[in-house]
Amino acid sequence: MTFRTSDILIGVSLIIIGLTEVAHLAGCLLGWSFLTVMDLMLAEIVIMVIAAILFSLIRHKKAVAVIVIAGKTAPEKKKVLRTQRILTGILAFFILLQILRILTGERAWLDGDMTLETVNTFLKENAIYTVDPLTGVPYTAAMPLRLRILCLPTLYGAVCRWTGMGAADVVYRLIPCVTLLLGYVAYGRLGAVIFGEDGTKRKTFLLIVGILFCAGAYMPGMDGFDIFYGGFRGVTIRAVVLLPYLIACLMERKYFGVILCVLAEACMVWTLYGAGVCLLVTLGWVVLHKLLSLLPGRRKKEAAG
Image (cartoon, rainbow, N blue to C red; front, side, top):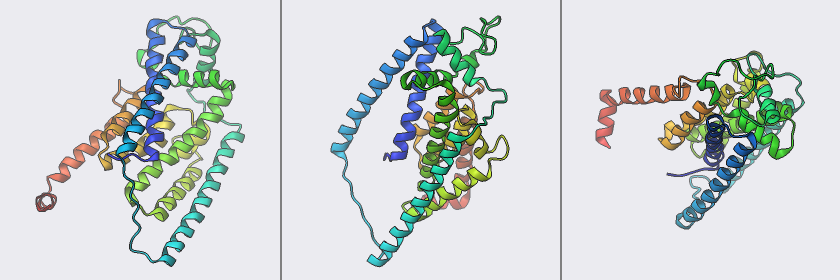
């Protein structure tokens, strides 16, 4: 099982969401203060970093890097590399413009969303879900458990404490930028699965994705709109990061990544107790794969080799 930089970036991000969920549940169920929850999160992240370093050291001793470039003459290689550098420069400039659009934007998609109010309540009350974010008074009725276990407000509040940034800047500026970058990483992973080692096609694919992000920024429900005006929402992270990465993992049969996507969605988005879009896509993929394997032509190919 091979790991790329994209796997590490997205995998670490999803694991952090999982660690946040553990601390968040402890705060909800045990009545811990928000500062105690943050201490638990920090301890979990430190343990994860140490484990990752040990794993990388062990893996490094066993790894052998082999780079093979064949089938092209020297002039052709230079031409391909030049094309890839140009595409990389265009893509980097394009992403920078999109980040600036998020950082300088004054609008946010807030319909039915209370993320900022919830984060401010956690920080002010030093507790998790003890008062109504809209009224500031204790809840008169218990919140649905499926809503209480969603951990993104806790993660955003911890980022506010650790960085000293205001809640509005974290929720409406920083997190959407991170979502955008992770989205490119996820689609880059999908492009690597589809196009293999053809760097030109992969970068062209990412450039097309970026253009579609901009073209889709006209109404809610489109990935571009959700990124630029609601990149802090769990549904946006699911659509832009989890789904493309999930499909890439399914195509490569990297089931650990599939499990991470399914669990991360359950921690971020209101689902039917874990049965969310990622799980449905996975089940649909498995069923389709089984049906295709029953086709006579497919069975002959498998029997032949």
